[in-house]
Length: 432
Image 1: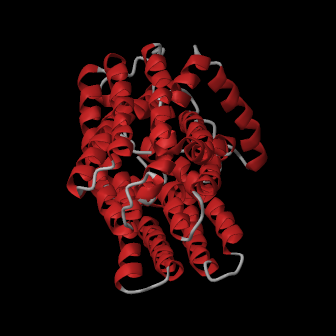
Image 2 (image 1 turned 90 degrees about the vertical axis):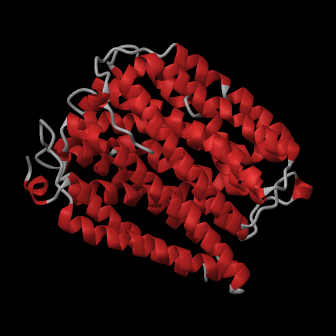
Image 3 (image 1 turned 30 degrees about the horizontal axis):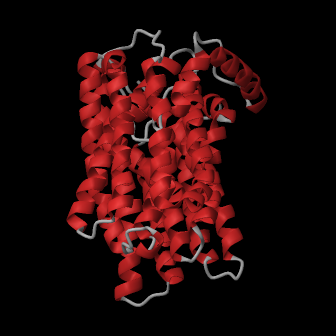
């Protein structure tokens, strides 16, 4: 047990760590799209710009071995949290520039790279500092804390932009400046707290002597990953599991904001933010239920039902785009149903990556490789989703999403299971 572990109980750092990991990732992957929508960009441009921001999570396997082998994981967590403090401050100030679009896109990319590195190191601390039994005990806390970061970022703070703009009369630029400064304060507070309580996480079994040694070891980490049995099929399972969800992530919120004469629901930021917060609580409940089911019966037995649970509820957006209801309570209920299914099903992917793709000497790096594959899907679908939506319209776009949700279920049915890590002792209920 490390010195950091002796100083701080896991409840002092697990919730704050994953809250600090969820907040910036959602800011880059989701909140940026809403900001650009308020600032007047088209759906196609928003999807292209913000969809490409997933690239840091796609390519983070390139430097994951370095994070695992060089310095401590605690060092990287703190360094990235301070980096994001600076980038969020710079983002706020950049909104005053004439060329704000190019500058903010570049700064969101920098924030994304820092957040992706924080993900690698943070997961490494969790895996390395806690025993398998402790991972199971705190897995639910981990997932809930990550999603509380999501509630803050895409719920509370989005609602706040609407209040600042509508009730206080601020321009959208000034309203979003306040929110970006708030993100900076959250990351600074996290860095200060984690500087006191975060354990180092274990070091790799074959620790690198320096950067050159780390890069040499990187080749071994990559080679061992691709030598896993049925790795091609396992990669396909991970890539396609959230295929339909990838198209919804960008276009779902924009569909909610788009005016009714364009086929949207015409909701305000306040309503969207409140709806997102409620839906995220549904997501958390679904995640806990999915984790309980997998822990009780084993992931192999419930993987296909979990895939169904994630993909079938996409029909809710198809319904909303055709019915265009006006009752906010009803809309919120329909969206929450989709989020419950998403939470219930997404636990299958997180556990599959943890239990089947990660085991081995380079477990932190291999988990990063797997999450990078998952992020590649989210990037590819996000980038093209705006063009597809504008070509098809909202009604036909969500029909397209339903068709895109078929391959994930078929691949889940054929998913290989080789590692004998079933049961709650192997579980990690992540939300990202």
